Image (cartoon, rainbow, N blue to C red; front, side):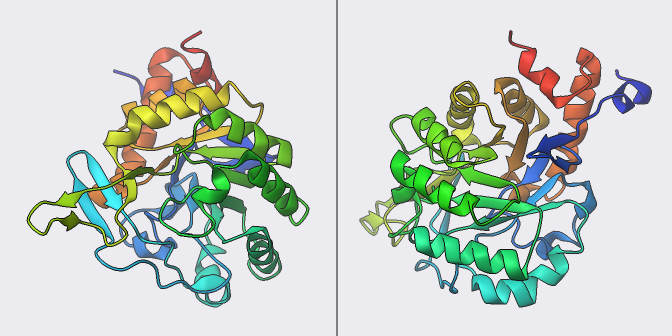
Amino acid sequence: METNGAAETVDLSVTIAGKRLANPVGVASGTFGYGSEYEDLIDLDSIGALYTKAVTLEPRPGNAIPRIVETPAGMLNSIGLANVGSRRFVTEKYPFLSQQTCAVIVNVAGTGEDDYCETLEYLEEHAPLWGYEINVSCPNVKHGGMTIGADPHQVESLTAALRKRTRRPLLVKLSPNVTDIAVIARAAEAGGADALCCINTVVGMLIDTKKKRPVLPGVTGGLSGPAILPIGLAAVYRTARSVKIPVIGLGGIMTADHAIQYLMAGATAIQIGTANFVDPNVTGTVLSGIRDYAAAQGLRTVEDFHHLMD
């Protein structure tokens, strides 16, 4: 058993593009609302980073219901980036988010390069926060999202265009639904991304055999939860060895051991998504587990995890 003294010697802070995260444990976009939904359930100050629900230029009603269905080892969703839009985000969500001590990273989505750029410019002017997570990997929209994220030329062009519009950390969220994630990762890096987040959800579907139709009205959705842990780990391992910028790992993290695997695979930080629906206190449990493991292994920083498999 580790002593408190040993755990206290571990420095789990993380730096991305010169800006600090108090610890590597974040909450994934789309699973934590805009933060206020969880403020009565956990101490938001304990989170390393809060990735907001996606923000688009105009409000989006999202896809037809049902939008979420449980699967044997996870969850299938087809939300369709439903959100309040950039203007209501500024008036309704930003006041609360701007008061948080954890890093607040706004997930930005769009239908094309001009749309992304206009949204980011508006947020830069009216709702400046820690940084941006550019969503080029959502599988549940007809325009933008994964169609952009699967094309390295579009990814590089979009990232470069956004890079010109902000000095804040720019994180690009990658899709696993591509032939070679390393190619997309290098394109984002070439465009000026400060870090990469991988992975977004995996395309999947379920069929109702009684009704003889897909369960989701949109036919397919994004699979998350423990079922995609091995996919996420493989993507992070490959990506971290293909670029020089930090990689943030997510996909299927339910326990501290899962998070530690991501750190060992090369992730600088992690995001917890579906597990927040199961246990709102999961972030604290995972952070404590990471700290205890580091102390037991004689590790002093997050970077030390990267060398455990050398």
